[in-house]
Amino acid sequence: MHVVLFISLLISTINGLIISQIRRSSLFITNSSCALVLNVTLPVGSSIQTCIWKCNHEDQCQTGVYYHENRTCLLFSEDCQSGKITSSGNVQTSVICHRRNQGSNNQCSRRNWTMTGNMNIRRHRHTASMLSNGRILVTGGLNVNTNLNSAELYDPSAGNWTMTGNMNVARYAHTTTVLPNGKVLVTGGLNAGPLKSAELYDPLTGNWTTTGNMNVARQDHTTSVLSNGKVLVSGGWGAGGAQNSAELYDPSSGTWTMIANMSIGRQFATASILANRTVIVLGGWTGATYLNSAELYDPLIGNWTLTGSMNDVRKDHTASILSNGKVLITGGLSNNYLKSVELYDLSTGNWTTTANMNIERSQHTASILANGKILVAGGYNGSSSINTAELY
Image (cartoon, rainbow, N blue to C red):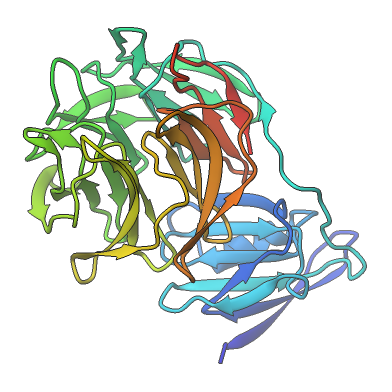
């Protein structure tokens, strides 16, 4: 049974008296695919009261969801009665049921893809990370046969790109991870060969500094930030072929520790952290076979287990966690270049297809913007690098 807390707030606006009902240990599932108004990580020291305040001051907000552990605040234009409230299990979340206008509710059409501004440099096998200021950091990659150490920033409000500081090492097929302190960790990749090196980007200065090397040189691997702040690195390609090894990075010491291996070696896979804090690693390439398999890493137990397989075998795809907890997979490569898209449902372990992208692309990036849309940028189409971008 959910614990229900009623809070009455008097706001000096034309909306008058506003009532918020908070449901602890709950998640909100929308009926409308475009109901998300805001997805933001609140500053250190914030609480659910900050999320309530944001909902009160956002004209479209009728429901909010607050993730207590990482201070994430989601605002929706669909009311609690229209959507579905479910138990969040072990995840510390609260649903804020808030209606200022009993006669209004979000109704919107299905999301589509639209073009946005081009990057300054054509690149593929690069990375993209969303910074705390809402901008997207794109790093490295390849332009034809040139290894890149350049980086640029995308501004969602303006739809344009600007250059920032260069990395210390030119690299592609690497990973970037935003740490709890706001810095961005770059690991591994390929230059003359697979790399062990890692470096940190500071958004406040736009500069890069080196940090501890990984134990295993690897390219085309995956990284995930766990709830304890450590970074999980898994798989990739290194000495001997596709790797099933995994290791943890500790930001406080800048050091790496080996952990349990995955059930299968995979390169060009993706990794995403699910609502139950497990990490799903999916797809990729063994060196001989494209994969549609997926496996889950449990940080509490430290082991790996298999889950449902995708509809399409693919590598060089992207994976994004949507506000409803599902995983959106875009594009990639199998026997041809893909524009297909599918969704993973944690509650069932199953996959379903959804609308295709406009352009076939692999080795691209996908980033969740503050407004809930997904920015897909760059990639490779079999003949050239791509500088186009589209929104879902």
